[in-house]
Length: 224
Length: 255
Image (cartoon, rainbow over all chains, first blue to last red; front, side):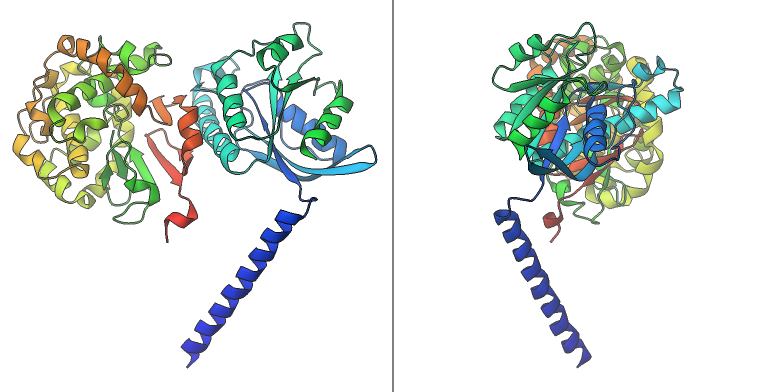
């Protein structure tokens, strides 16, 4: 009865799979070394990808994705796994997820200012919207901690920031707020601290590499 | 704002959870969203404010808003009895063309078996959206309106209760949208945009409640409801200009 035999085989395979997945789950539960998945969130053009690239280059030598002054350059979440950060003789392993900038409105006309053809702008807009959906989905499903990146030259009191920080808090996720672009003259870190006093705010310039030591200290402290 | 399966044409009311686990009829997971804006064109002036209090203020959205507002009103008036009228917000840009093909020809049929209509949706969407956009003026084209109405009506009816549609048909008065065939809401006495205005304001809350996770204002312009996106189990993985989108369904939903 080949059919019976196959059925039995299938069942055995299923059992093996089950066993595997149980032991995987157990190892997830008990091993402290499993990398935490850290989502880099924030509004468009805050410097999320620049930061992700800075971290990835510093510790793995690779980049995560292209950076651009045009908003919504990152339209798909990109992950860099097993980034090992060494601090004080210990090493912390994280997966970093660079996410598309979160916004409540995407308008292709915004891209037309950047010398983009309408078709390209519309496509970019559509992809950016999908990207936001994806980023929100990741936030709910797949993230163990959040680095929230803000452009410190801009007003942090926005609907998006408030809503996202609120969601992150409701999830009880560990969160660090990064006040990026401190190399710019208009930078105002205090304004960000005032906006979110309940969270640790770390000033930095991902582009220039300013204050990265503290950045890594905090990452290790919060997500290690 | 009906959603429609692009494979078999089955339609789902806005907010319907049926489709979240894939199309119950054919198992497809690609759906087209038929915004009401197109149909609604009749009430251009009144709506801008109501639809999206905060975000939709922009000019481009006006037509849409209006449409949806009108739809809402119509739903309230006409469909309430049935209980079908809940979907007003999303469906604005109903594609007239799609409507033409699907609804007008045989509203009743669509109702009975949404599957039959399946073919139409694919072709029409682009046209419909475009029409919507331009459409602040839509009121004038009774033709377009009618078609749209029919489509919308059929879509809704399919979801709600097929039986109701046939009877009411032909009577729709709603400011020029009246649908001969589909006029499910035919009774809807709502006449002009003016009439709707007062209602529109009251509808604002309702519209907000129904604000979808992603609203296509026009191709390339989107408004996102972050909480909705966050709270949904499924998520949208591909948008199309024509208003269709693909969603990813959690594995455990399908057996």
